[in-house]
Amino acid sequence: MTEFLKRLLKTPQGAIGFLIVLLVLIVVAFGPIIATHDPEKMSILFRYKAPSASFWLGTDQYGRDIFSRLMIGARAPSSWQCWPPSPER
Image (cartoon, rainbow, N blue to C red; front, side, top):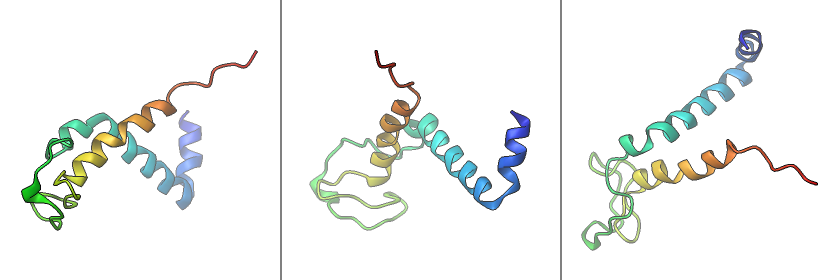
């Protein structure tokens, strides 16, 4: 395993790819903790808000926090990638 990491991190492409995968894993593991608001909570008062200290990526047409929705939404596809494919018979 260490030989694999040494070879991977030797090239810039490998290092960048490793950092991207590491970032996705951190988001998957700590997404609910990092999320600043409830991703399903709607508020007409906060529709289409620009990015700010309160809403890091702004809000959508229903007033939901986009950053929180991305943090929670990244978990489902990432968990699917962990399952091995079922063998065909």
